[in-house]
Image (cartoon, rainbow, N blue to C red; front, side):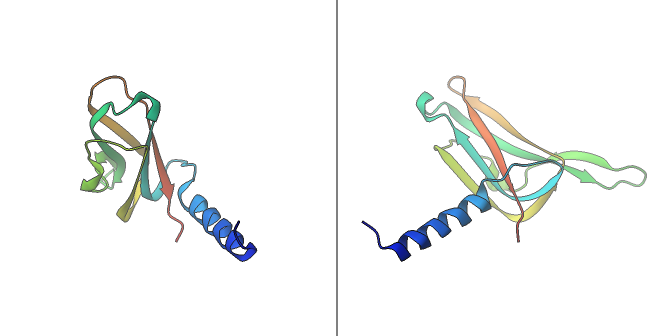
Length: 118
């Protein structure tokens, strides 16, 4: 069906994409990609959401933490099967959360983040 050089090139490309996006996140860390996945069998249940990162802010005495949206684009209305959103700048966070602001019914969504590689 495909020539051997094409199969090799496509396999290498697939491996590179998987190594870039499919990364377990161990917090605290620095990341530059937010990925959301939903259960497609249950349909479109989520109507609006936000993604926040817990950022350490250096204070005069002790460090403090606050929740921030890494990028204003991370607030949204719906999620397709897979929503991959690169951030403008890498984010150093101690925690990441998904806020489901409005849903028609119970929604099953997975939040993933990819660490910086370059």
